[in-house]
Image (cartoon, rainbow, N blue to C red):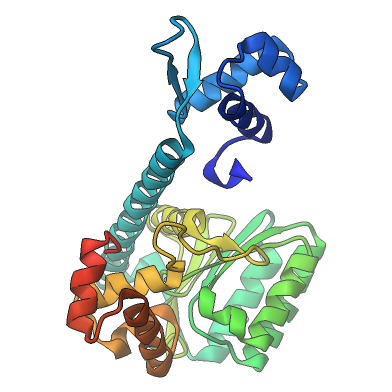
Length: 324
């Protein structure tokens, strides 16, 4: 049960045994948990790293378990702080990459090739897919994707997947409600690929063998055209951007758990952050891949939980509760 907080199953068992039997020493804990004393010592080191055990005042030289309402709450708070830091790093990386790509596209057109229109983009993606040998990384924002685009993607992906090329794909959380995108994502999973979702993603992006990338010329309309990037420094930055987004995303099929401290889903927390930062409902909806109606439905639910009669009051109460 505590694996979600970063504990191994055996460390969780030792922690539970220490809570149930505070007078047990290493030998007794080993017997209770069916472990060797050496294994118990290793698990105690693990618990100490998470600050779930501390030196006993009553029994010098021994450890006691920190009460779960304190220790586990502190673990969760540290994880939330780490996640917030990674999200801030992702936002900074996104801005830096966007600026770098724009500057390089203007100053050095030879760094890549401009592809105008969907036919040119699709032809290039198919060519690169056939030539890649090891890995494909893809970011596909948006609440849904057109069936014909998904069919074209499947046709392009089938051949490299059959050759053993690994694929990791990121979609937005809202695509979990789109049957066409969900069906395609499950097909990818059936072929051995990995698929994750997140509330907010970087701009559309496909990276081939960490050596070449396709990025939209106009992030607001990826169908206008794309830039085929081959500059090593820019491709490396795009790979870093993908990895940061991947690290905070949730595997498709895994439950999207609510924050036990606030009751907020990841999408609701991100929506509060965006609106608290001054974005309009329309802009926040675009970032989250949802309609304005859905944004307002989420806000109505949050206001009800906060017992707030206005968004202003909701913002104050959310800040007071540490939700922002």
